[in-house]
Image (spheres, rainbow, N blue to C red):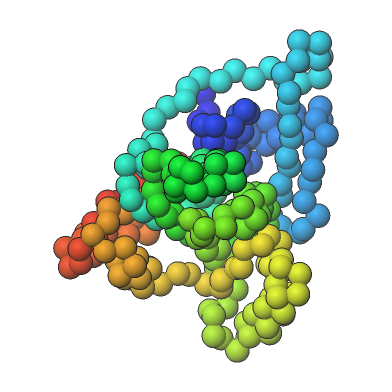
Length: 269
């Protein structure tokens, strides 16, 4: 049995998973679906290539065209209780961003639902809101530029539909020199001009701007504590163990020194 993260939201009428090819089993799985499904493969050169397939269950074609898939689950994870917090801080390293895509999609579906209700009823029912967090901050840190292709569709959906700025997204590419370094100045200049002209980031290929190097986590926590006083912030992290202690310690420190309460959760991935 191989565990994978569901990336579709509870309200979606489909089930989606994102699988990274690491080892013989997942490589064979990718090859199997690549042979029988029409695939969209990214043209961007990267060690992490993207193959996207859509399989629709149909009794007339299921046995002849597509592999048979057996699914067991879903199983619980810390992030499934995200709705009990006022604010969310979602942090994913590399493929560790996967568990949080479902949360972003669910928040996005709520935003669309709110917009539809308000467009129909206007001010008759006031400001209609679904229960759940009021804001979400998503930090995705990766070394591979090609990784941004995985969830480009979600990032563009957020940019197009989140008119109230409920979701704030931050992409970080660590394989580029530190921001402010003279060697990255030219890249940043071209990036800024391209985004201003076409609304597309040249690094991620999406509408979300990409930062270079790594986030200043102390500043991130400090800014959130100042912006959301007397709030309960759920901090969800998925990635290498090296960052776990720092994020856990910062959550404890800022909970003790400010009126904001940070609750840290480590996703097992």
